[in-house]
Image (cartoon, rainbow, N blue to C red):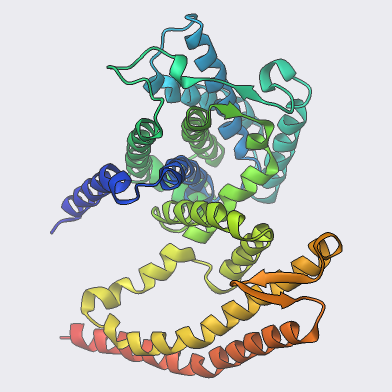
Length: 419
């Protein structure tokens, strides 16, 4: 099977999944979550055009996402008042144009330099726009933001996009289009030059390419797709606030892209789905959910720098060679101490957060895994510490066996493929 056929089958499978997903996960919460996953997927992939493809670490990518969302919200209000004749499914194009406009303006300044200088400029521009959000209240709406109503827009072939299911399919359509376009860009000569500028800018200059021009073009394209994501966010929530352009949103997309894997095109998609799911789920379970995200990012940077996609890619040769099953027993054995580390960490985090934040108002009693415990007593802390240390020591003891099993699996594959 050729690479082109495999690619077409992969996109067909993705399209089929986007169509049937609402019938698999039928709750309203799941539908809202999947809609947000689609928006975040486009946003994370647009950021990966900078970080993963061109090597530009931006701390202000939410600027183009948020500004385009505000422009889309204003456009929707103009459409509702019959001052602009655009159907709702075309509103993401307004976001794309807004992203293009702001990308050209800010990109002309920030892409003159790369590396740390670019990162600091992007951070400064992000803080500048966030400060203007409190000043230009006619555009940003102050602390309340800008509200809109997608139902007031003219129907599109009979669809008014009031039900969330219709909005989901609109987001899914744009998500599929953007994924296809961004993947196609990575396969063009321009995409290859972005990789060259990322890996060896001096050699790219030597063969006659302007690295500043390549960075600028990648920056603008990234802003365009971020603008589409921002417009879809405005359509989905019918509300835009200054939080969408803040540093928190920029950090969130960085977390999604890095956890998913910046070295692989599918990495940001995996990261967007995973982080959106965890953010939506953990926020209903624990008040310390932001701390879990911080620890997740640290662990990925330290132990899995290739992200989830990189970890999966390491196992691809074994899967194709039929040797992946040799790792199942040792992985199953590793799951036991890993579970101990995870449970011990959760207990320590919940105990510490409760005693530092909630104990004065709610007392020392808390519930973890539906088990009531007293945070002011020694025993919960001692139990959590024993479980954590026991799991950590178990992981350390089993690590040589994992390495040995991995080497044997790879060696067997090599021998199998040898003449």
